[in-house]
Length: 152
Image 1 (spheres, rainbow, N blue to C red):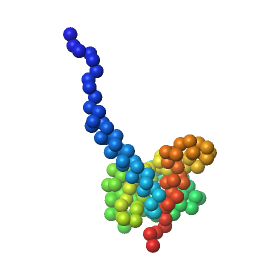
Image 2 (image 1 turned 60 degrees about the vertical axis):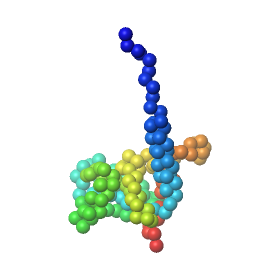
Image 3 (image 1 turned 30 degrees about the vertical axis):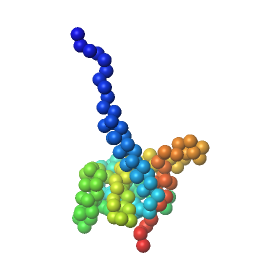
Image 4 (image 1 turned 180 degrees about the vertical axis):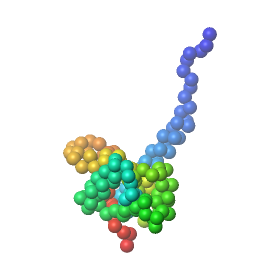
């Protein structure tokens, strides 16, 4: 007859992983207030209607909210090196648009794709009461409030 009692959990390893993730998230969140540039990787030669529509919508939101950004056209041969560098950072090739933050120290972090920008866009309508009750929410203003055009 086999013992059906639950196996002991390896809580020490799990605890370390949780703490490491929490430290990582805390660092990410604290960096959101640092001055940063927004890089938008798009493709002006994209033939996928959904990707083209997503690119247009995302860039229109940035323009309408006066968020400084730099466009990198993944279809432009002159920007191939930069495109490949951004693909390597995101781990996603050929899917547009992609968004990145470049910090003053030269570090580039992948922010996300269209879905991330769309989710942030939807936070613009949240009431101040909801935001006060949920300070952990990533919002448009938290994410893009410290975006600068240049580090001059």
